[in-house]
Amino acid sequence: MKAFETSLLPGALVRPFAWVLPFAETAVGALLLVGLLTRHALAVGGLLMLALVFGTALRSEWEMLSVQMLYVGLYAALLGTARFNALALDRLRLSAPAATPRSVP
Image (tube, rainbow, N blue to C red; front, side):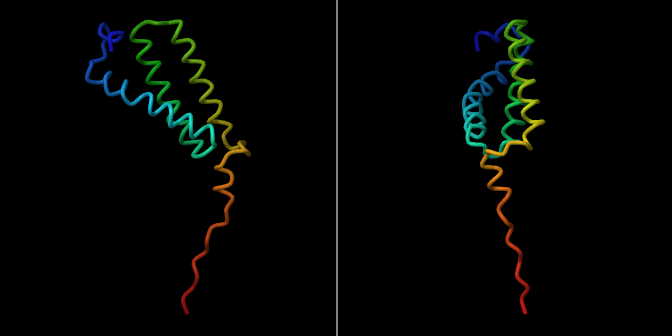
């Protein structure tokens, strides 16, 4: 909160984001680690990183911004290649045969 006191962002936005961020990062990391809902987790992780990039740019911390931009690029690359992820639980979930409805006589 103190780091953003001099930025253009109001404290009413910074405080809730600061409370939600650790839980969102943990959820995204856990989903990616087990390979469940991979595309959604990568999209949410990328959006979180974009929000962090925006806040870092407002604070003019250019060295940190360059590192965060590398993470954004990594998220984009992972999202673009998620269809090749053969070891994820998503692959098992999507390859399960769908139940076909029975016709009633």
